[in-house]
Image (cartoon, rainbow, N blue to C red; front, side, top):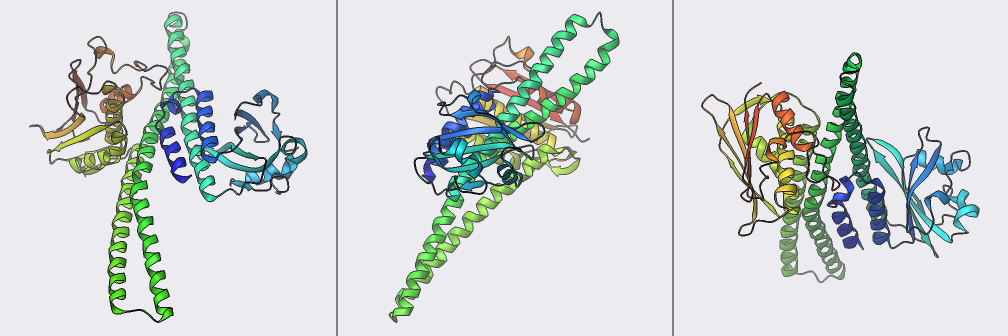
Length: 456
């Protein structure tokens, strides 16, 4: 069951539907994984209203009941249930008809629908609980395990990507509509132009923040998958140590412990503990690198740092994402420069360029070679840095190249593309880093992005 749940979570985290902006279809995908991973009869998503005094069903799976047939749950009707939700913890009700948190539903809902057990896990977005994922077992009691709760907990975390994508799409539509209105009203409403532009800037800032969260979401999915391997090996090693110690204790109690058995057991214990230590250090290093990259991309602060070492650390956090897309990273970091700049801005630029190449450049894999992205640095004569990212992918059509940095220009409309990734990169390089960004691309022969950066 654990392996099935891990596979379901991995496939869902890589599904572009979560970032497409289609909230209804993304919710259905999450609930279907919930049914498959827990082998239960029904799952649903409920969200609070603005005052948090009621919850409304957004989606139910399978769709035996219409969402419109399910009334809102109000705090006045179900005070004990809402009091349990206010604690922001998982509601684990094996006997839902008698559990303090859920027995209020017994007569009106649980008994008529033959529901015996419930598992309600909070949905969080931007640090706030916004609702729940409700899991229901019919026909018999279900003793929910910690693995079950953890599985649904990860699904609830992935729901944050769905909300971010829906919000991003809403901001995008607002911005596009505002641009269209500007074109027709600019000659008639000059007096209101400044106010409209201020609204556009504010909306664009929200959209950029949502784009940052989507970029970090890709890193989260890759790092989570990558950390599983050393943690799994560590668990296996420590289990083996426990077995050896138990066998040693049995021999001591029986009075049959000999020198040979003691020496063999000690040797195996040393080997297993060394294996556990190596893999735990590996997991800790992966998490440290990810945390540093996440913090850098969220906050731009000026620092002096070795640019080659920093680029290598950022690209290390992107390795899992590249592996998922079967792309190899090749590094040639030879500048030797110390920059005084915004490392967070550089991390955001690298993340967007590499993930953009993985998604767009290799939709058609290279015919006679493996998919590769080469990242190289060198020091220019004037002391500035030249950073180049070159892929051997499909290249960019000639008629698209003049528009590649325009906001909302994308060839993946409806498939999760917003057309903002390279526009954000261009603005960060020009405004935050005061550098230059250019590209050279030949259809069928790949693309090269060249950045020139200096001290700020």
